[in-house]
Image (cartoon, rainbow, N blue to C red; front, side):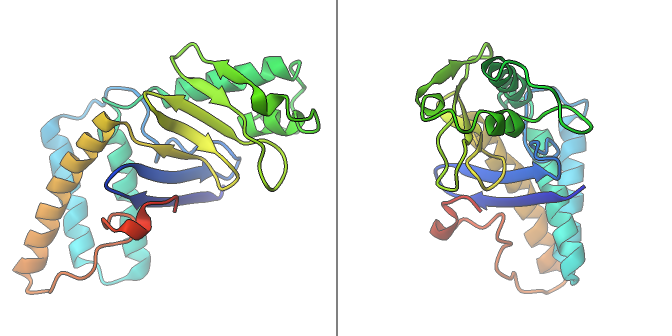
Amino acid sequence: MGISVSGSVSSIKDVTIATSGKGEPNWSYIPSAGKSNKSKAEFTSEIKELAKKAALSTNKTESEHISRQVLQLRAEYLSDVAPDRKMLYQQAKNAMKNQNNNPKCRGIGELTLLDFLEAADGRGSSLAEKRFALAGGGTLTCPILTTGGYGAVIECQGVKALSNTGNGWSYEMTPAELAKKNEFYSIYWTEYRSVRNSVGTELSELPDYLEEKPSFDRKA
């Protein structure tokens, strides 16, 4: 299964793109409501361990692997304050399933939301003008893409909680998630700098997926 993952950080919103090879959101990288069975001490230990590995890594492949682990752990860390994105996604699928008169599955496995949107293509602009209310408190809109067909934007708590407008599934963080994210990286970078200083290595430029730069105020 192919996986596309990238991240960007800005002072306003955090947008991460994470799509599985089947076209579904990759929930390993996208936070969704749920309580982790890990304690704060266990999280802190895991965050520090990844920071230590990143600080000592000199291999690009290993560094990229660590970067993915950081994003996975971050998604888990944010889960206790995150919107229920999994539920919103399923509700959006159900809304489109009803819109498309429940088409049969093609091939093996359940249809994705994008499959339902593809099936709706060719119906004119009426779908793009609709706004579907989701039981979980969000709304679904289906903008027309410049490449043709429809995208999906699920809004909840004042942000685009989950969206796909042609470049893969992405999400914006809520204020509560942003605060939790800052807490996560405070632990991470304190440990990272401590390890780098202890071995006498100058702190190099931060990885793209973490660095606070205006150029990353976009979808990666």
